[in-house]
Length: 367
Image (tube, rainbow, N blue to C red; front, side, top):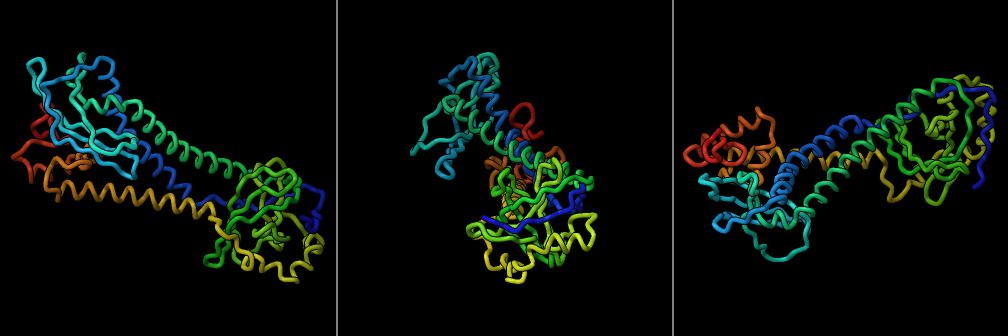
């Protein structure tokens, strides 16, 4: 694809720092993803570690009682099993709730028994938990690595953008390069553009996000397939290309004569209506980085709100104190919220045994 040449002065030039933008969601979605990762680990890791300890010296108990056992399959592959384990060993009675999660395509019922650790009899689980132990370890690790990798990747991208922005104010040689506009969004007079460095001869394949000032438009030079092509510049050894505006206002230090001379080769394209190419050739099926982040964060927020709402329903309105996963969520709540939740449950079920998350050291009375 041939494009007009942008002739810039040979001297080093600087660029406006706001020529690169960091999506606002980077600053608050990353902590949410990290918090969900920690929540997942706190929720599942103790049970996996408990069953790993039991697997080192397991002792099946024929006299043990597995009560209220139930397995629920979600999304056809995620199976969540819970049961109440009641047993006596060494003259001491134990009563505890156990919950496990694993990936399985099984259809039908599961058979399970009660297994304890011969070294630590207070540790008990379902035999199903030991059968699926490596399945659970791999599932937990995969989810944790994915979510942690996502959050760390966002942190890395944010740092790379910040580092690139810090260099723009330093004069350096500018090298024009074509970039492909992948998505754009015009709101409140400002144009947000997502573009990719994948058509230049020295392409890096990196995708960049920028917000133009009111009245600014990208310097468009053509079409590549269905996507508009605009001009950007490489600023010295800065890792990200910088999208240019149609009046070169993003370049600092240019005289008016130099701007006119640089834009002269593009005057015919501008007169022919190339400035409307964004509206005429809006990329189809493309979602901007900002839109993807908003969708991901919206889903995460819905999950957080859903979990918190379910917890409120459990502690204030559940018909039984042994409702799961309400017990598990209540147990994972910060101490003040957990104490408040247990007080609500005790006010309604104080005459009965305490549930997991509100139980004292004897596994029966309220803490």
